[in-house]
Image: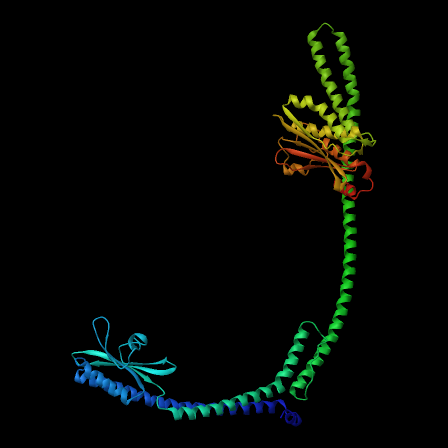
Length: 525
């Protein structure tokens, strides 16, 4: 048949019509089966109505002749019914009691009580049950004659005396079942041949294509609508594969251009950042140099302007001292004036020394040794101010190229600042450490004094800026210039209490080659 259908070259519409015709045949067979079932149900209904009428008749006779008082007659009446109606397999008669109904008569021996075994209802009801591989009706009929009340429960076989109908029905059903099986098998074969195999092949091809296999193609089995779908799908996959190759090539070109553009932007950004950094550092250095130069010029001019008058005053004071050697009050006052003049001269010299620093002469230097010498120098002063000294020096600290006197001046300035920040006493800690990953050493000066505010922290190293009641504001600015000349940096770091300064210097064997050293110079500027 498949060859015939293929030779006819049925299209999809004709195939669908064929399937519909087969389905209609199945519907006709099902209708015939339902008709036969309807006849059987009518026969069963007639049998059921007859059984209910028989139960009602028995109930009326029991009520009419008051068989509740004569159980022997009641038993005979029940046996007559069972003998005339073999479909009545068991009849139980119950009398209502205040608590539980009492079984007063039954046609069965050695079987279960119908009231307790099947149904506890005492009203007029009927129930279908399955018992001993058979289907039964359990019919309940109430009884009442004014003196007694109760009910009958009858167990009636549904299919009694219908053997011929059942045999014909069974043969008819076998024929229908065979026809249905044959129709279903034929429909299945037709469906598999015409639809399932080609559709399954197309679906599997779509699954492969969805997973990324653009080479997947469906097999074209026939020249019908499904064949056209398979061919169209294959053509679509060819177009998708071609466009995918074009897209991949375009994406590759875009990625290449993007990478090149990113590299150029990164290079330009780096160059611009470096140029900006150099410009900012140059501006800062020029600003500091200009301020220090202005301060030096003002200081030198001041020293020159007041130097001659001071020398003249000093000469006159000496003359007055020689002219009045016997006047004690005069001598005392002249000594006070001379001491004040000496203080003025010392202040001018100090300003000149700060603004006209000598050139540094770097030499291999042990920072721990400078710190120890500084501790010996300031220990008496700290002890007199009730300040405890703690030190934590790294014994493996490498040497640096530095000017000892210049670094001593920086360290001493930091110590003096800490001393002034602890008027009531406290603790001063000196820490040296080697930062191996950066090839640097660091020196920290930590005090427990009054601390430094956030606003003052940003101006600490500006010339002529100070928070002290007395001071030139040049100490930290000059200290920063000295540290920068050594290739390092100085900064104020945060601590829980007080203030802390950190001086960082490059080690001696990596000053000109270490990347970290170059980074320190940029930060210091």
